[in-house]
Image (cartoon, rainbow, N blue to C red):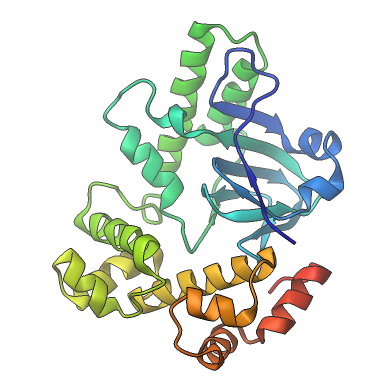
Length: 293
């Protein structure tokens, strides 16, 4: 059950564009269902722009129902899989990292922040009516993308897509955190440190000392940016890694326990059951049956 790592590849684009946009129905119809419904880890970002229908998507072994008007943001390095549904309409947009930096503009960090903010809430409900700015812009992105990809077209696509993202900023500014705020800086730093240390540092106090601010400050930043406590964000990261290792299947339970910094396998098993509602063995069975919680 090893999770395969997937690198960005755009087979259609001879100029190696770092953005790919496809109609979601075409995407489902032209790829093997088994491949799409297999868990994979991405090294690029995906947007699912849903204009019609409803369905579910899986991110880090959790089921996320979606409906028309939803934008699903799948961050780089997350484990995900599709649930094929040919009644759904909209766009699949794949983005590779160089897309954010190739033109060297200062606002690219704000653009990237849009894709990294929804760590705990990957779905935004937006206005996708025909007269909405974001719908007009994403349709133009697709139209230009379907043309020949010369240098000018590539720049136009980049400009249109950035305008699309910033139109979402304007519409959902109460849900999307500005990367220049102090709360986002603390939240982002906390997340970075968790990624480096979650196996060994298990309390928010450990991280507050590394950042040089109080636990209260970190907690307020997490609440503001992700609507989650700092403690829960840390717990979720440990649980996520445990799930990934269980799915991968290369390590025994006691090996996972020690790898994640638990003194005893029993402590790890109790921690996992407390925060997921199931035992490690039950979780592996659920994954086999593709019935996610």
